[in-house]
Length: 85
Image 1 (cartoon, rainbow, N blue to C red):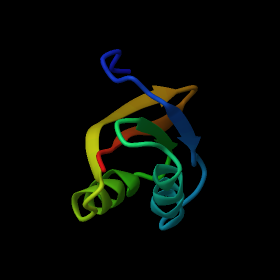
Image 2 (image 1 turned 45 degrees about the vertical axis):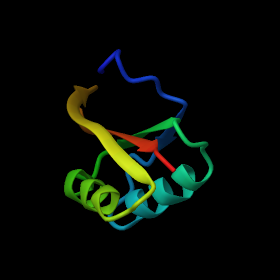
Image 3 (image 1 turned 90 degrees about the vertical axis):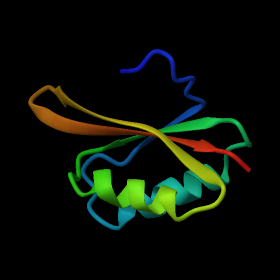
């Protein structure tokens, strides 16, 4: 995990498939303040492109980073989304 990212809130959508990770990420981002960062934990490999594409097309968010790691034999995709406006 990148220790330079100051995470305000974590959203766990592991076990959920498209489109739920993006839908729940949008809902969670709507609930944080400008300048705060949401960490999203997902197991759906499609979340890498889905959340990235959503962030790119949304004016008030920025995709800060995406990471992939192995946790207890399960691939976990971490997305860091900041609210910018």
